[in-house]
Length: 484
Ligand code: AMP
Ligand code: MG
Image 1 (cartoon, helix red, strand yellow):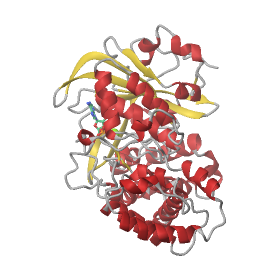
Image 2 (image 1 turned 135 degrees about the vertical axis):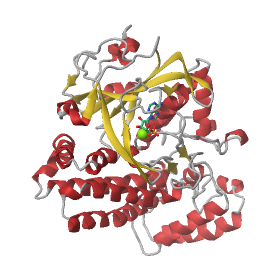
Image 3 (image 1 turned 120 degrees about the horizontal axis):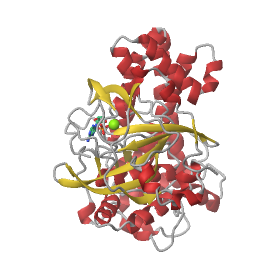
């Protein structure tokens, strides 16, 4: 087991030429306190449990005290924001502290809220407690659901004031992720006509994260194909759990296909395909039901940036893999949610009709699927009493029962399987809001409990059914803005 200092830092990104970043020190948060630490992430890094008890832990993790082995830098990137190219992005309030090689892989340590950088533009380089805690919780929620995501080792808070719509206090999270390459990194070099660093970036991704692809005849094509496949799978995963990201700009898209940059996201309550989780997204560009096609739009932007590296024919062919992959991946996830082992003709329509009925009758998305695990034809189904359209349910459920009879799986085995893919606990916005309000008063118990529940969201956690319930009236449709 490692100490903070004995982690095997290789800082691979820092070995790239200076055009990729600005080396610089963090501006420590005054008097930063450790508000919460995620022990499962610490274990992933191979940190010894006693390291988490160190007196100087907050000082080191917040950037106030030197952390031997780290070589902090701010990355430069660009990106399409709401469809418009912005050439001037980069780590404006975060820094890559270093990269560590562990038995679980190569991990980036990125301190978010670490002060101004050359890419801060008009920003103050800080993050507020509210948004930092939302990211801290959401990372664990996604990880618990088995969906690729950045993680967070810890949450740090301080009394330092930060001005947003109102005065708030500053916070930091130490983000842990398998690389921070974004689609926007490639766009940065492409739009500047700098094709050599563009190739270096692709080589870097291949060498450090996807070395197997170097054995292929056309590694750049293989890389783009891998991004297409992973992104399609990620979209299928988001759609199947009812997650709306909110800001799918190309600078928030991870090359390695994991969820990155949690802002005004939502795990939906009642099923609402057109849900817009970002209060500032007036046109609904990033509405829930547009995510799969927006991801393809973003992949197009990435493919455009890859054009100096590949023949046009190959680019087109690679992008064409997206749609069938997404559809298959989504279908597979939804079938699992329904406890169907095989894919049979008619399944697609059965699922589409279910979703249509759910939308019309405002059924809570995750509660419904969890309750469906207990549905049998032989006994009354308790959840039926909560439906506002029981007649619509009777019509659909009869078709579902007929479909189930085409398979030989026994009821108990099916229920057990369904319970492993229909979560009982998701990070509803109102739960995050309650944890924020408590944390702002210095009370981290709510955060602590949520981290526990969300770490194993498929388990029953007796005594905590209220955390699995739809929101109370005040918690519906909370306005979550981009301001963070
Ligand atoms: P986001 O919307 O959080 O993905 O951020 C978009 C861009 O704005 C990125 O380049 C961020 O680094 C930058 N940014 C966001 N908030 C701040 C801030 N408070 N200070 C400096 N830069 C920021
Ligand atoms: Mg971002």
